[in-house]
Image (cartoon, rainbow, N blue to C red):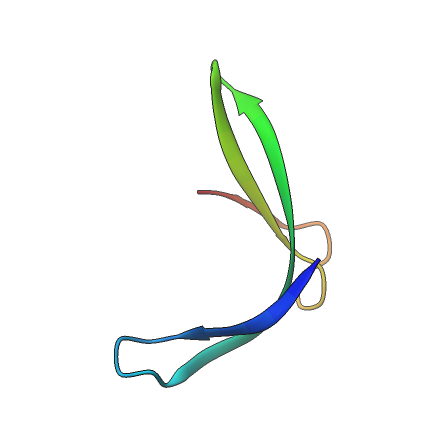
Length: 47
């Protein structure tokens, strides 16, 4: 897991996060699945 902050274009802190990074093969392509383990356990976003 990685911990840190997301910064906006003006370097303001948008969100503090702890994310797990998981690589999954979707439709023949590798995608990164982000799971926010602190704020929303179980939620994943395809990026």
